[in-house]
Length: 357
Image (tube, rainbow, N blue to C red):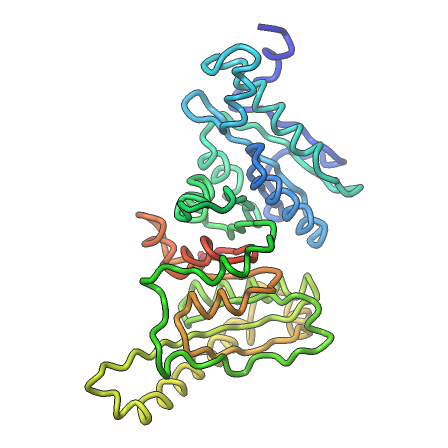
């Protein structure tokens, strides 16, 4: 084993800094991004760089690799040097993959990036490095028939367990609109009056050339946290904020004749939830810059459809889709909630999962 391979490994990992930052500790304004040498992680890195420039923040580029679990790119590089089970070769390969991915994307002048190889699994590395950060950014595996696996186990696990917002970044492709039209049959909307078009949608104006930030609300604490976070993002981007509340009225057949009376009442109740959510989250917000938030253009979208369908449709041309998570523990779909899980799988736009903590 050569000296350059041996020297790449430190206790618990390797950290180096690009830019002028002198501190390697995680700051609450840092953006942590997961790196593994895949196209998905490159998309995440590019998204994180754009976000860091908007915020004036520092990036922590984290690659998790340990004896029991390494990204495929690290294993292949290690095999070319010594062997797939050589720990020193694996450590060297992890550092090389991290350096190469950062070298492959344009880095704006003055942007600080801390490079960190962590001796841990990808999930553990990101959760540890990102627990006090502003957000964690992860990529996807691309698009395949096994759609439930395409997010990647690391990205899904981080989204489930992180206390800070997690952004699942992706590069928009020509097929994305068609992909956003496919959701699980368990979450499809029924035919009939419940499939009405959105009401209160914003008119097409020149201002809408700036892609909106879209957020889903249902009155829950997590959705209010998502709304506050989305408002801050819209203010940073100078973008309109589209606030979506979906109500799905499935009227049993015996009561179909009375639906003409039931549906208006349900719609009124849904409109109340939408209005109250905006007032509760933005009217007296203590976690956003209220002056900037008051300047953004807020559009209310009340949609008679399933929540997943409404959010996917509303975010087809969005800069970002923001959803609330559901608590902690268990399987991804149960933990995040089916709406958060389905939007992560099918959205053409990057998806931010926000938790009320």
